[in-house]
Image (cartoon, rainbow, N blue to C red; front, side, top):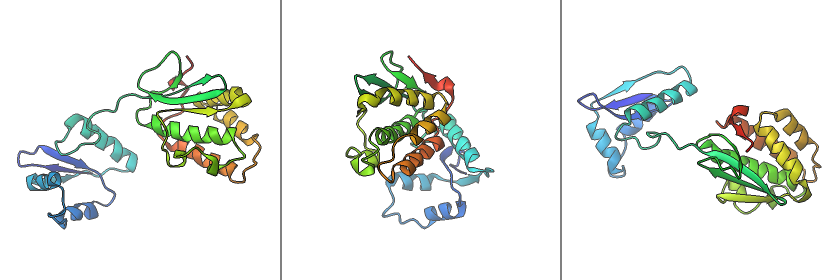
Length: 222
């Protein structure tokens, strides 16, 4: 990590890089004619650069987040204010599964969280995963327009037909920590599309590596 300070020792900017030499050298050789004015003002204000070594990436991320929120350096924009809490929400309406991201718990929706920004990742991953489970014969090529690239409407609906009950049940199982039961359910789905099963598990692995968490304490079955 590196902290750029001015002549009064005030922190102007907090940054993180695996290769500090390369990152700092990029500032030194940058073309001022192509550099944003904000960056030029920063470089002209820096008196010294303090380096802080972290043992691993998670520690560096935590330290950076702490400094951004407590110091709020004038030249940092992202991460200086805590993100609002967000919830992954879903409900069954007739034979449709509706999925959304909300900032508050709603009595008309079941919810999981709070997750902050990870709620959007969780929604995109689960929407595609559940859609593939409901339509195993279509595969990726049949996904709604934009879904493959994560371009989903704020509130989406998956037409499940007679499968609505097992879909809703297994979604609840997954979010309450019963991942084995959820995996068993997906394995039992007929694989009409050759790429379905591997694709579904790639999405599931992405879900597990997001910061959404899997604690049952986050789950609200209202």
